[in-house]
Length: 57
Image (cartoon, rainbow, N blue to C red; front, side, top):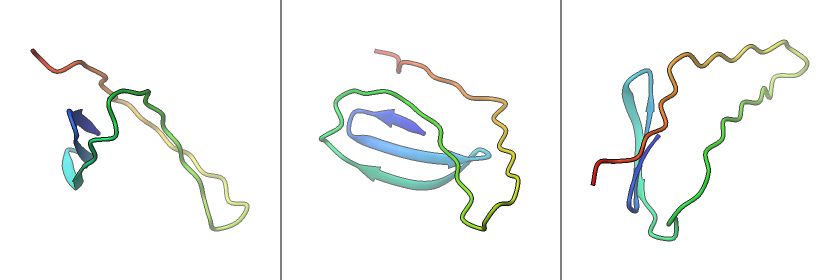
């Protein structure tokens, strides 16, 4: 996700999947969450290139 001011852009595998704006977000934290709705299957989630950065002034 890229958050700059009120603009939020969500990307998966370098592809933009969603963009929106929300001026109520003035700061916060990040988190990652995954869930399986298919029952008791084993689920493996891997993140190998997460970048958290502050935009240039």
